[in-house]
Structures are given as C-alpha cells and as structure tokens.
Image 1 (cartoon, rainbow, N blue to C red):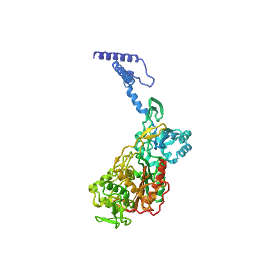
Image 2: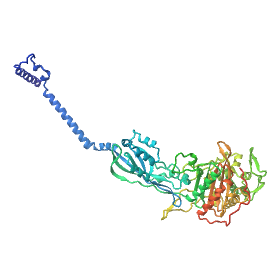
Image 3: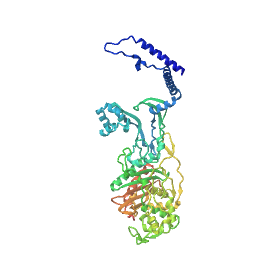
Amino acid sequence: MQWLRSEKRKQSRQDKALQKSLRGVTSVKGVKNISLGVNPLLASHTPVWRSQLMLACLALGFLGLAARAAYVQIIGNDFFIRQGEVRFVRTLELPANRGRILDRNGLILASSVPAQAIWAFPEEVAQQADHDKIVKMAQLLEMPLKEVKSRLSKDEKNFVYIKRQVDEDTSKKIAALGIKGIYQRKEYLRQYPEGSAVAHIVGFTDVEDKGQEGMERTFNAQLAGRTGSRRVIRDRLGRVVESIGDEVPPMDGKDIHLTIDSKVQYFAWQKLRDAVEAQNAKGGSVVVLDVQTGEVLALANYPSYDPAKRKNLSGEQLRNRALTDIYEPGSTIKPLTVALALEQKKVTPNTQIITAPGKMTINGATIGDVHNYGVLTVGGVIQKSSNVGVVKIAQRLSARDMWESFHSVGLGQKPDLPFPGMASGRLRPWKSWRPIEHATMSYGYGLSTSLFQLTRMYSVFARDGILMPVTLVREGQADKTGKIQPLAAQQGTRIFSSTVAKDVLHMLHNVTLPGGTAQQAQTTGYSVGGKTGTARKQVGKSYAGGKYRASFVGIAPIEAPRVVIGVMIDEPQGSIYGGTVAAPVFSDVTQQTLRLLGVSPDMSVQPGIVVDAAQESL
C-alpha cells in the first residue's frame, strides 16, 4: 500500500508539471483552449506492475513453446513418426507366383504368367482429359468406352482399377500412350492350356488369384505360396516416393501333380461330348481308373466351360457331374448283389433261377423283365439283366448283409479324394428296408450313387476282390526331368474272395458277347466286360416320364484288368439304353486308353456283333 501511495503522488506531480507548461499556450482565433491534462488518452499511463505482469506472461508463453518443441523433437519423436507413417507410409504386397498344376506326365494344366493391373487416379486423368488416348486405351482393353469413362469419373475415389490381369503385350501398349494418371501394378494371369477338357478337375481362380473351384480351390494354400512385402512412402496422391526398410521377397507356390493323363482326359471328354450332342442329352460323365495303382486317369464332364472365360457361366456347366451328381444306378448294381450271394455260397455261377413268367409281385408292387427269360443261370441273370432273377437271388440274402456289402465298397460315403463338393450318395439303414425295398435295392433302385462311386465299386472285380484306395494327386519323387514317379501301390481292403471276383468278371465279359445287353462295348484288340444300366430319372418324389440315365461300367482287358471305365449319359433323347448309348463311348475310350498305357492287345481280331443285343430290364 505504501508503494501504491508513492506511485499516486508521483503521478500527481507529473500532471501538475504538464499543466503548468501548457498555461502560456493560447488558442487559435475562434477555437477554444484545449485542456490536454483532462484527455483520458493522454492522461493514461501503464503501471509498472502491469508491464511486469505482461512480460511474465510472454516469458511463460515462450517457455511453453520451447518445452513443446523439446517434447516433439526428443520425447514424442517416435509418436509423431508413427503418425506420419500412418498417413504416408504403406506396405506394398509383392505377389508370389502361383504354383502350376501338372498332369501325370508333367504337362501343364494351369500356370501363371506375368500380367498388369491397370489403375488410375481419376483426378489426374481428368486434368489431362485426352479423349483420343482414352478411346485408344478402351479399345486395347476391349472395354466399352462408357465403362472406362464411368470408372474414371469416380471423383470420390483417389484410386480405381480400370482392368485387372491385363497381358504384358497389351499393358505395354497402354503404357506407350502416356496417359497422365494411368498406372500399372504387377500381378499374374492364370492360364489353362487344356481348356474345357480339364475344367472340372483343375477349376479356376478369381481376380485375386485365389482358387474358387476344383484343384485350384482344394490346394489353394500350397499353390498360392507366400506374398512378399515392401514398405514405401507415398505422396498425397498415393504415388510411391521412396522405399524404406528391408524388402521381404515373395515365396512362390508349390506345383501340384495330378494322376490325370491329359491325352486320356481329352479323348474321353471328346467322345463324351460327341455322344451327348448326338443323343441331344442333357449331359454326361466319364471316369477312368487305373486298377493297378488306384489313380484317376480321367474325369470328364459335359457340358463344360473354359476356365479362362468365366462370364455368364451356369450351374450346369460348373457342376462336376461325376462326383457331385447322384442317381439311382439301376442294373449296374446287380453284379454286387450276385457277388455277395456267391461269397455267402447262397448260389453258384450255374445255379438256375426261374424268372418265368417274367414278372413277380411283392407287397402289391410288380417287378418285371423286358421278356420272359424262363430259366436262367446266375450268369445268365447278369447277361440278360433280369430284374426278376436278381430279386430272387437277393431274397436269399439278409437286408443287413446286403447293406454291409454295399457300404463296404464305398456306397453311401464320400470318396476319399481331395475335391470340394463331392456327394456321398444315399444308402438308408437296413433296418428301415421293407420287403419291396429289399428287392429293389438288388437291382439299383432305392439307393443313389455318383458315377465315380459306381466305377470304383467295379474295381473290386478287376482287382481280384480287393477294393483299392483311389487318388487324384500323384504322390512320389521327382526324377531329373521333374517328372513325378509314383510310389508303390497301396494295400487295399479285401471285399470278396479271388474266386468270386473271377466268377463275376467272367459274367461281365458275357454281357458284351452276343446275347448280352452290351455288345457295342466290344473293343478292337482287347477283351472287355461290364454291365449296363438304364434307370428312370427321379424328379422330386416321383419318376419323370420319359427321362432316363443310361450308363455302362466296364473293365479291360478282362483276363488281366488294367482299367475300369464308367460312362453315364443324362436324359438321352434317342435310344435310352446303356448298351446302345453309353457302351459305345466305353469302347472308344477303352481302346485309346489301353494304347496310351502301352497295354498289348489280347485279341488278334475284331469281334463281330452277330446278333441284336438283348434289351435291358428297367
């Protein structure tokens, strides 16, 4: 307070001195005297304490700024570097080269070639707006100009793909146009040299190079490998300015070797296509198994598709019918019923079965044959495909034994194959079988199976009563040329005795001889055997009128079996019988396959068809 009074007295003396010095000043004519001593602006004076307070505040402000600068530069440096990285540092993926898919002989079924993704910054392109160059780019990319312009007009995006997986030649031509704002990024384009013939096995990848169907999907992890990475700094437009840190190189995917023989596969697909088109059928399948190794040599389906051109594909084209489509196999099941009866010694090959008058009734349902065959041996029942005869044989077997026999050969179970979407079929528990179902099961109605399951079942008769494991991927060691050499054949499971297998094999051979239902299965130079099947097609809970599936499963050569081949034609519009629709396909495929495998002919002359084939009972 003492200090404040002193300051006031000092201020008062200064004011008095100022007024005294101004007393002699007179005013201009007509202007009144001005008293400056009372002017609030001139009279004001900042107190010393206030000045000191202001200086203190300024000092504190500068001290705070200095502290903040020190924090940013020293203590918080890592944090702000991380924030900068979040905004401008990016990790770029370095794509790995996807592994190849090869056939058993090393022929390429799927491989990747370098390609480019064409992308753009719409803002940069708009600034240049060279219409002629944009038109030329659209032509090179085989895209509508309207679509290209639509992509480039997306102002809300600073990045947009124009087209993915563009081949190297086209991408170079686009780069030569020099369009500002158009850029390219390395990727890979999947190619399928064998096209439609192997499409259902190999499958395809999507634009991100991930497997979507077939082996591409099943073995995606092995084929894809591991992507690499590179850290870079981008500018505000996303362009790479600088690389930072160490680059992690990509690891290419592994090759997958299949058991498929491309030549057998293509020939089977070609003959199947011809048959389907000739019969105006809905579709069909062919399966070729090597009974010595259990390897799948061919798995053909028609209609098919080009895996390199996948726009507007239908489910009919994509479906691998041989593995996914299930149907009532009809008469192709009869040899299995007979084999069980032989194994249990309920009958012998020469046991006589009375089929007259060509029909029988069970629980009010009539089972009939095409003709009244009278008395037939067990072998004759197979040769003539008598429904009445096989039902009378089945009546000597228990439902449980039949179910166990069917189950033991893989019916009602998914095949042990590395393939997506396989069907297990339908085999109801034996306890639910009524007498009529016990009967119909014996000739292939009341259960369902895929063509692959059915073909594998027949390998039991070709392999001396042993059911062999099957494989679609060739396991073994690579030789000096890179070719995979197979391992020793795996041990299978014995289902029937060797004697029973040989007896059934002999019966199957008679089916292809005069008087049998499959004379058109005969093959130049090779002995064959097999069984026809003509089954009504079930739609919903009832059978569709006029719709059938014609099939034939056969073995060759009959004395020293090497292959089992199954053929199924869906809804043929001409002849409906397996012996006239499917058997000829079997004949052609068998001859070509055995030649390619180097199997010597076991017949010196071409067998002749001397009488009309017997019609098969439905």
